[in-house]
Structures are given as structure tokens and as C-alpha cells.
Length: 313
Length: 243
Ligand SMILES: Nc1ncnc2c1ncn2[C@@H]1O[C@H](COP(=O)(O)OP(=O)(O)O)[C@@H](O)[C@H]1O
Ligand SMILES: [Mg+2]
Image (cartoon, rainbow over all chains, first blue to last red):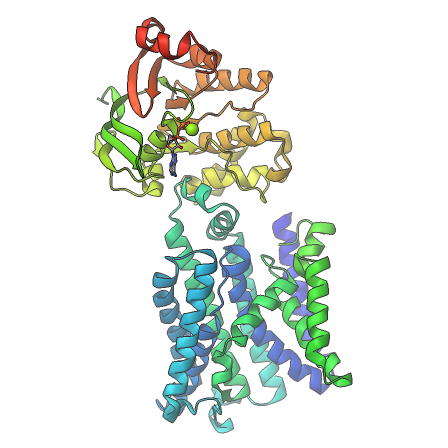
């Protein structure tokens, strides 16, 4: 029953995203292409934060690893889109293994600080190799290069549906993963790590696996961003890009399958709308965030789950 | 043929700063029996089972489980060998349902087989009397039911050795009776090491008793032998019901 409802909900979300393409004006279609890519990032973050209970402040490095892995291998390695995409995701995966081995020795605040430090280091490395990365300024991936099997990814339609397909794969894969025994064990760690260990679970290995999967999804998002929007820049490795996924997931609902998408949409339009009538849009956004944190601490989907739809996956 | 003892410790010692919580404990635990570990508060009982299960790192000494030296194994590996452990301070997954709590305990061995996993979970819930609360969130349970849930999580693992640290603490009389019955049925298939304050539970369940005092193993034997032991008599049994 729950499985059926989840599948129905997830199908509805995906159908709605397809429908939006046909009903939304061009500006919002573009916005939603971006939203779906960033939602992949949020989905990855949610596995570690929402399900496993580990708060990372350094996920921008995984996003950026995907982005730079993609961009640099195209511009300097002469790769085409698909192999470059694989390079980006692999880079994020390897980085998360390395970071995991070191950072997972710590817990709580120390883990936050260590991940933050790794990400800052990564950011500085990008700046240091400015000759190749062009630092803060970043670099463009030529429109002509951004195509798969002759399909030009730079048209609004191709971009939207490439983002959609990637989102759908990540969204469904993650929904499945968190319902699997592996996902339940991660939740067990979040709920009571010592109990999980004393049930015979290898908590260290499970956490590492969660971090690597989370890093891979972030890398997919980073590579997809570079592929679809044609820009690679160090600002995506900066600290605010580590804070964003935390905010998205908190707002949308940590530990829910739809929360990350909701959070990204909410925050995107919060800033979009408020910036259209005031310069102090960050203030408006900030106040909205504070209110939501006060009155719906479990985020939008989390609060729905608590108040009305207890089966929400 | 399986050896008579399932667990042995040699020279097990734990020093906290200047405090000798456990001193040179040589202990042997009989298979398929219930052994009660008693002793006053602070005697070192929790420390001892902590070192056996791998939660606490000993200062010195070794632990053998079914003849294998497990002194260097991390806790989760020892659990995988067939130990189960319930904490003195109730330790469950508070935000999950009762059913999910038990399913996680059963799932380490059975998660690959959905049917067997569901059956095992249901059977344990039924056996322990939590079947009708399966969908309740664990943190909403009464204290007594939370303790029972933790015992259920031990059962669900089908352990060879089940270590329970003061499981009846804070339970109502009726719940204690149910616990005694449960221990007796369990003792047929598994070995139980029970830290227990309630002497009625000890006399009604235990085949063997070990007494710990100030970090030292003072005596061990059958319930009658312990009753007859002058040192123990003088120190605890005669003086307080809260042995
Ligand atoms: N983590 C610890 N750090 C310092 N002292 C401890 C620690 N754990 C237990 N102790 C001390 O070790 C002694 C034995 O404690 P414990 O094993 O909990 O006794 P029991 O379970 O028999 O009541 C006590 O004096 C206690 O204060
Ligand atoms: Mg104790």
C-alpha cells in the first residue's frame, strides 16, 4: 500500500514536471531546467543529511568536482559530452571517497568543520590553478560542443528535457534507495548510531557509502549544470553553494523524497519574486526562512507528513 | 561437540583514570543457561558486559567467544558472531515505528529475504506482545513498553548469547512476570547473561549466578551455592533486597 502510494506520488511529480513545460512561459521553463538540476544536488545532499543525519558544510566541492571534471575534460581533454560527464561524476565520486575516509572519523560539529575545511581547500585549489580554471571568472563551454549524438542541448526544449530525464533518474533511484534495506540502515544511524552499531551494523562503512552516493549525486548535478548552462566557475565551489543544499533540504523537508525538489522551487521563487519588488530581497528571503524554521521546523514536506499524510515517503 | 562454555574472559581489566572498574576478571559462561550477574551499583557490571560486547575497550585482558579470541574485534563484528545486547539505559530508534525498530534488528540477517524478514518481525512482535502497537512511533510508547521493545530487538536477532543489562529496571510487576516467562522460554535455545537487581527475577530465572563487587569477581556458582556463600551472604544477600 505504502509502496503503491509512493510510486503514485513520484509519478505525479514527474508528470507535473512534464506538464509544466507545456504550460509555463519561457522564462519559467528556463527556471525549471535550473531547478531540476539543483534539485539533483539537493537529493544527493538529503541522503547524507536527511536520512543519515550527517550535516556536511562542504558539499559544494562535490558539485564543483562534477562541474570542473566535466568542463576541464571538454575544454582541455577534448572529450565529448558523455565521456566528459562520466569524468565529472567519477571525480566527485573519488573526492567523496577520500573526504569520507578522513572526515568520517569525526562527528557532529567537528564533521561540519572538517567538511567545510576540505571544501575551502578545494575552492582555493581551483583559484590556484587559475590558468586552467580561470578562477572566479570561470569559463564557457562552447555551444557547438554541447550536444549528444547530434542533439543540440542548448535549445530550451532539449535543455528542459535533459534536465528532466536526469532528475527523474536521480529522483526515482533515490526514492528506491531510501526504501531499501540500505536506506533503512542509514535512517537507523540517524536515529541512534550506537543502537545501530549494537545491532551488528558496520556504521563506519554505511556512512562512507552514504557519503559517496551523496557525493556522486552532487557530481551529477554539477556536471549537468555545466553541460546545460555552459558555464563553469569557482563561485559554485564557494561556501554558499555548500549552504544552499542544506537550506533547500531543510525548507523542503529533510528525509523525504519530495522535499529537496520542493525546497529548491520554494527558495528559487522566494528570491525571484522578492527581488522583483525590492532590492532587499535577501532580507525578505531571510525572514521567510526564519518563519518557516520557526513554524514548520520539519520543512514543507516534513510538516505535511506530520500533520496530514503520514505515509509520505 | 560444543564446549560447555560459550564465553570466557581472561584477566579482563578496565581502569578509568585512577578507578579500577574491573580488575582481572576470569569468567566463564555456561552455554544454554541463564547466568545472572549481580552486585551493588558501581560494582562494574555494565563495564564488564561493555568489554565483552566491544562497546568498551579494556585496559587489559582478553575475551573468547565460542573459543575464538574476539578481543580485537569491533562491536559490530562481535554482534555479527551472534551476540545481542540491550542497554541499561533504554536504547531504541525513537523516531521509527515499533515495527521498523524490530525489522532493523531482524534485518541484518534477513533483509535479503523479504518474506522471511516480514515473518520474523511479525513473530517477534507477537511473542513479546507488541503486535497491536506495531505502527506506533517508538518514542510514544510507555517506558515499560520501550524496554520490552528493546528486548524484542534482541530476540529478533536470534542471538547465541543475549546480554541484558538490568532489563527489568522500572518495569511494573506484571511486566516483570512476563519477562521471567520470556527468559525461561528463551533459555532453551540461547545463552543469557542477565544483569539484574531484582532478586526475585534472579531466583526465578537464573541457573547460575556471578557476583561482582568493587570490580572483582567475588563468587560464582548455582543460586544455592551463592546463597550459601558466606562472603556474599554477609556482603549483600542478607543485608539488602537491592543486591
Ligand atoms: N565512562 C566512564 N568513565 C569513568 N568512570 C566510569 C565510566 N563508566 C563507568 N565508570 C565507573 O566505573 C564503575 C563501574 O561502573 P558500572 O560498570 O556502570 O557499574 P554497574 O553497572 O555495576 O553499576 C563506577 O564507579 C563508575 O562510576
Ligand atoms: Mg550498570
